[in-house]
Image (cartoon, rainbow over the protein chains, first blue to last red):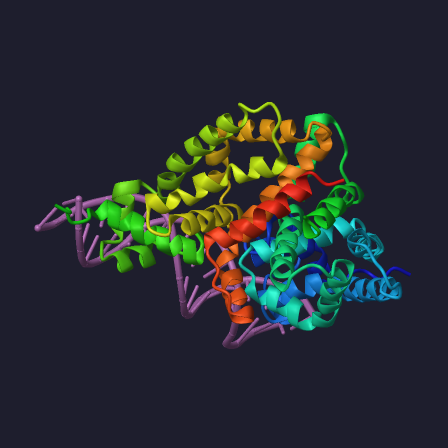
Length: 208
Length: 208
DNA sequence: GTCTATATTAAGATAGAC
DNA sequence: GTCTATCTTAATATAGAC
């Protein structure tokens, strides 16, 4: 039997949708609670404050995503030689599997991550990088294994460029998908964005 | 004789510094006017509202930057064959010349542009793309000339990825420069960021 | 043109009854 | 756990004296 959604889950679901569409800062607690049909005060009762709600929304995805990335990279690294394309391809399955976490989860997650960096959400950056620092380190290690010729300096800059590309793309993916559809009648989903993105990133990181 | 700065210019100078450091949304008119030593109401008197002040700050740079880019691209396109690296290199001189507009102008401008996209500043995006649409079109045309094999779809996505890389890098350039300095004692200026960025972008756009 | 004082709006958070 | 009512804060913007 499908239990009726508890207030806490209603808030999470509605908040996720609104955060993805309008960003964290431009979504007020009033908007969330009225659309969820719950009382304004219930956010504070269940989550304490808005920061915590934001983290809770992202957490449902990160808890699925990060371990999957770690597993994929560990498996990949069993090979003695790996290519940059393989490193970035390793992120594909973990991303796509978020569609099983929630309907349309892949796009949602990518949007939310983008928002987390472009809205002023310092606490989110901190939360993610400290909590999942093992996975992030494994990724850097893999990049370096794929291209050992990269100097420390190049590695530093290129990974940040890559992060920027992802974040911006995610944050504006909805707008871009709409433009692409109007522009040449092509429907765009998370899958096809990844198809375009992965080779671009791999080429940039390995440039020259 | 150096005339004493008018209120209007004091506001512009202080606003520029604060916008670059903290972003548009996180810089209040109160902070600007108190630091500039002028009255709160004077912003509204001279600029009408905050949006217009934001545009005025960026305008001092755009009016120098955009025509210089157009000139550089027109010159480059006199050649019948051009490389992707050349296209991106064409942006270097116009960017560096902003140091003549104001002290440290290159970094300032890059920061402000980054902020304009990552803060919620829809009006800025609109303002720039409509006002300088000729220059932007010329850039796209040049990219396509450098790599005519790019499909319309690839072109579309890769240019947006490129924009994302730039915007994010600019918006976080200050933080990145500090990390780089602490991390491996290297001082980072606009010039050296460009040295890293240009090959990365050119490789990504031309991938495969 | 510049000032003080104030209007207006909107948000996050909480107190206390039920 | 949920509700109403309210507190607090901080921002943009404006009215009107000088």
